[in-house]
Image (cartoon, rainbow, N blue to C red; front, side, top):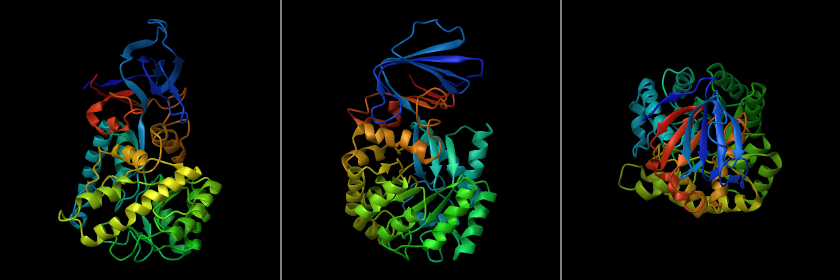
Length: 415
């Protein structure tokens, strides 16, 4: 694979065929000329400019026979988990070992075209360290937004030996827990506002944390310019989260029209992670996943599908996330979620692409900075063999991702 790092003085010209710019659901062009300089998109021309028109251009690359789009964003991954069937084995894994797992998993996702990942919680600050190592050039990997420890009530979804969340009860303890995460360098706060599939002591239909506790977390996090993501599967947990000012609703299994209306009114984004329960239910029985986890997952699948369709029909913002790392849901296979969103969630292919670009960037607070091919945005870009608009499934094969650029650096070149 070829590696080139563009300096602030050098430019690269990409002559593209069809391109999705990530500026909206209809943000397509048939042909374009894209100039990258200093790690950002400097110019985007409709059509193609003649060769040699810019003396700063160090290299010109012909991409006319491929499909071009922004680097993809996965809003919900767990880099310290690798899709193991028996996730209870994590009890024996050290934080140092989990950090190395996180690095390997992040590299797989980058190779598959995901230039930005939001890690939705680990047992410690492993992905914070990985993020800093990548940002400082020590190792190569995607952009990472890390949550650190998951906030959970006593007996909550993340209060297990294998999830090992930050247990906090009452507004004062929740406030302190948020401050601890900020002290340790997290990018956002993750909290469990309902039960879930991987916690034996609760149900996805149970709400967790009180309105006061959730509101306290949101106020404290927002005062430190951190967004808050809520693991919220139960209907009550979703509504409590939205009313309290949560920024993103993760999973959103049990929606109704009232919940969707609140989400739209408050400007929230849901991150359904549709592929995760399907992979657990499809592959888990007899392969190491505990029976209680499979049973909870199987019950939730139809409700999950109905909820995403309802949200889509009502105009809720849907961001792309996979829950990669959960059983049989492997890093590097993140793009399997696209087919789920289209075939089961009711999204069009262009809406699914936008969920992993423009909408995902907005959910991160990086609108017009990530997830788009526009002047001034970070030059994150992928080149695809195949047309995702006619076959969204072409994205799920890493071999179809022929070219990956992150921040102006060519990470993968198999043209």
